[in-house]
Amino acid sequence: MHELSLCQNLIDQVTDLAHKHQARSVACVRVQIGQLAGVEPLLLESAFTIARVGTVAELAEMVTEVVAPCVVCNACGSESEVTPSSLLCLACGGNDTRLIRGDELILARVELVVDEQRSSRVAQ
Image (cartoon, rainbow, N blue to C red):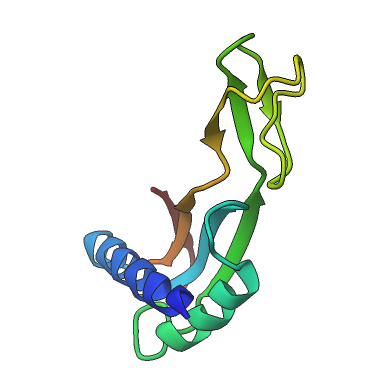
């Protein structure tokens, strides 16, 4: 399950951010997962509950946002949001396309708890 190693890397990044901003804990971690990233969102969320134990993110919630694939056509220049099983240009039907979105795993936002009264949001 490579999702666990991905989560351990996320926890390292989140821990660095928490220390940098002198946070007591992490409240929420938001990630964007492309449909072609080879990462299963439910498995990532499950692995996160294991990886966060004993860290500054122990009580953190993970929110995942799935990102649909998007291609740009090298023939006509159109951008198209496509399905993972068909990367054809929706404008001209061409297959000479380049993937511009949909294969990423991005740590998009981290919500840090800096004191009892307020939370500070830090975007990465």
